Image (cartoon, rainbow, N blue to C red; front, side, top):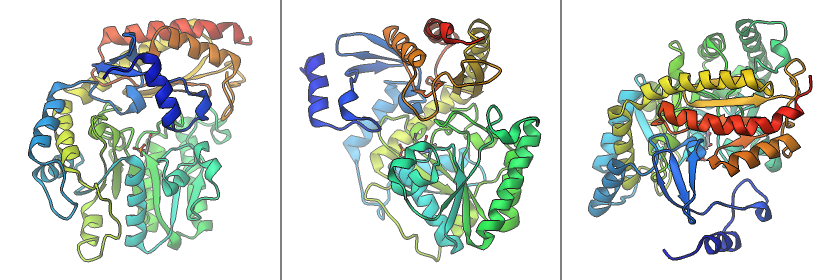
Length: 445
Ligand SMILES: Cc1ncc(COP(=O)(O)O)c(C=O)c1O
């Protein structure tokens, strides 16, 4: 490769589109190398990857075991069509069944959005019902049905979308009016009552599935507690509604468990969807994993759907190597441990910076919510609007100090690779500390 920093940027801007952005605003970092939790640009500048790119590079960058597994598989067999099988597919399927007890077969996809499309399709095929119930503050992918299922504002520009998704409110303890004057458990119980009412008015006989992220991700790590989850499971059982849990972001150790739903022992999903951490971004792969009951249904019913690259051989080989790394390096355990270190560090920052209104995290899926005033909880930057002045200053400070992360509205995400050490968490938090100093003058007593 011989292009300069500026050439990579200008050709990328001239000949390629960037997602979720007006094209003229795009000023990309041209990355040339990455290792562990760091990456480097074409001028040799080093950045901390504080968001594991898109919360997917769980095992960190440049892992030699995974790279070698990909190389070896590429030498032998890169691809066969989905109705021919391969050893990597067989092995990865079995490995997934081991880390998700209670689930059996996987339909492999290319990523998370198409995994969710297929899960919804399978639920509709199996139940003969049409509707999918999902949360407003959730994201399930950028494809048409998935984008509608995720009620996050990213759906709005494409509406009206598919007509069979119905949204309900969120277990947003920090902000939802439903939780005002209630404990978290009381609020969760009230929300479950509301969902049951929604089921009644929508007609239970028309509802195929409820779809939820195992731990809520880019909408702000807004997570219900055990009362919410047990309640939803109870409603699914009561009305014969399938439970689809989207583990695309919360899977593969991210939250300190193999999958987010495993924080709730009573929850028994009919299907989970996955992507991101399954290959940690080394190559694209996703999947829908089904319970024995759902798997058996498709023994004598056609699974109407397919993808040229379903169960791509190279991707499955990468998946095997990634799962081995997660196990051998005890990354699920490390995510739980480092999640605590991160949270303690953020609590200390909150003592210095009153703009930190709320800290929410499960393992290394964490975000802080910034406010102008802790009593009124007025957001430091408004919901679904361009960044406010202080938020722009925070972003500029993070960039100046080489910390790359995901910042949205008044939320800063803290989701580094699961290999991170205590020392590296300190390094990241010092940069965030510096950035929050920019916002302190905007706090209103
Ligand atoms: C919870 C969740 N589901 C689905 C997706 C979509 O995955 P993909 O971009 O691989 O289609 C994402 C992406 O961020 C996600 O966070």
